[in-house]
Length: 243
Image (tube, rainbow, N blue to C red; front, side, top):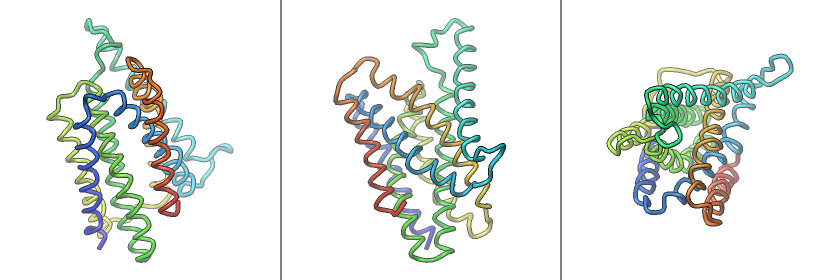
């Protein structure tokens, strides 16, 4: 049952990527929406789930929050290192973004989607009601995942072929994740730690890369409204799915 439901996540991921590539003439709106979706996923979904799953504290601070900060710093370190390396070879780091950053971020999205599939499988092992609730949240979120995967990969200068390849990998990941639950059980604290780390990476990309790029050439009110709409959409999904 879990693998069958994960087919819905597969289709929604592809739909999100298709939407992102069809509106290239409104790139600033695409980026504004992507930034809002990423911010909403991090603040309203990933971080609360990470805190719930990884409830251990280290020196008075929840482990999930420490990993969240570590993910933010890791993304910043990788982006600055690649940009500095490119600048040392005569490139302009403010004009030409390192394609490796986009591929790394997209790969993290693929990993997250695989964990979404694992979550579906684990929820159905608990019960049908729990499985349906988690599946609703994952399927809705995977539209945003597909949208963001294609957008992030393309934003950093990767060819359309690579962006489509990462989108396809992101779409297949929930299927493989759901299938893996038949054989492998991931401890909840490990899952929570991963979500915290991944949330930090996403927040950095949204706040330091996606949103500034969206407003760089088109500081329009409509871009801001699309960002708010992205956050509101994730809030709606979380509310409908029961958190």
